[in-house]
Figure (cartoon, helix red, strand yellow):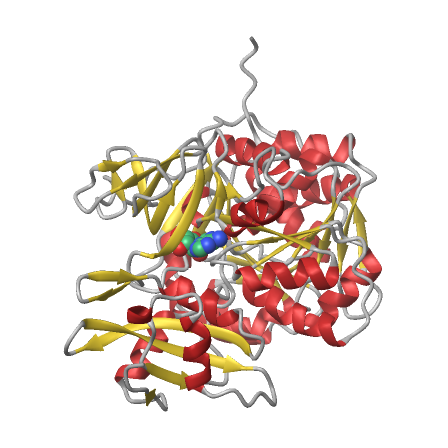
Length: 545
Ligand code: AMP
């Protein structure tokens, strides 16, 4: 067989020619902007020429983005890796000093920024020591960037920089194992760690995303990519779109439920991907407004555990099937997708759908005990999940030897705890650090949260372990109630008693306005624990039932 390298440039060439009439739609709050994939190809060539000829980007230098999901970000996704440089997607929701740390660690040379994000970037850019150029997309005033950097950094406008440049580029042959893109983890402890995706890993991962056991994409699909392009490469949706010919709908900065609902009604996506928080907000909106969601067949939910109540609500009230998926930045990110096996129907099918899903051939999974000993894949043995495969990172950027807390004998230690069934379905019960260790027994915080969120008056529930003199740790339940709800925490505890063993029921309860979230929209349990420790929560302690 021929040894054709698996390159991002090949995905671009394919999408921009064979699927050249497919479109990327960018939401603007007024008339959406439309760009064909053929035009994305031409603009990517112009950007690559500008980066090379004008800004002097060579070799595997890093070109960062500080952007929403939009057509220009898509252009950068293709241009930068295709020319042999490395795309670095900066997370716009991190604290400025974290953004600075990451940009310096990655040695970013250029950053492309949406003009609506100039004020945010201005807070971080002053200390970015390797940065030489900023490219501003849109018409905003870059004065704040210049003020923060002086003449160390040159500021360019996207339109001016690209104007008049050739719309073809002779994409170089690269080693398929070379880095194409870089993303830092959004870990809540310690400094973020870099994961470098190779051309090969992106290609293989994108194929899997398109497969029926992945997201099942084809040219008649329209993907609403809500999951940010700075979070785990938007789950691979942009590259998969170019491989499959599926159209892309990009929300830009319009991430609230009302505009998302409007995008669904007018742009008619067939599939959408987002974290549970977004879906939760959208559900409340759909329940109280008349929105045409008939095009949307599947909503992919991942990033944190999807409460079964959310899946049922979408399916039964809006005809949208929520598909649960699991993954990590370290895994490109796809780890598993929950599609019931042949023959499963009714409640049996639902039980499969609640799980984190089945691993594809590209991901090998195993469960290990506390000493790293492999446990049986029998669907009941509980331990830490470890994975390996061609789109799983082997180490973090800059580490000479793989960090042994995260890697073991060629496997990635996910830090997720759960079971693996003989037919490859993963069921997670918790993050290792969030499991509540009560009197030598484990309580799953996720199980308590899911059970609480099944109550009609509970919008969100976040459960953490807190120190307890007698048991070591006990669960603290923090709940956000629906507006106007009058349910008391005693009633919530009684409700839980219907499905949860009595000894696991929380004694400590706090009703809160909102669950604190991380930069990528997950429950920030570290903040909840520290608010509790600082006495910042109004906690009610119920006596034992
Ligand atoms: P990130 O690298 O930010 O995508 O975070 C990866 C982590 O998110 C995983 O290790 C899990 O702890 C969590 N996660 C992702 N998807 C799910 C899911 N479907 N259910 C439970 N946890 C999830």
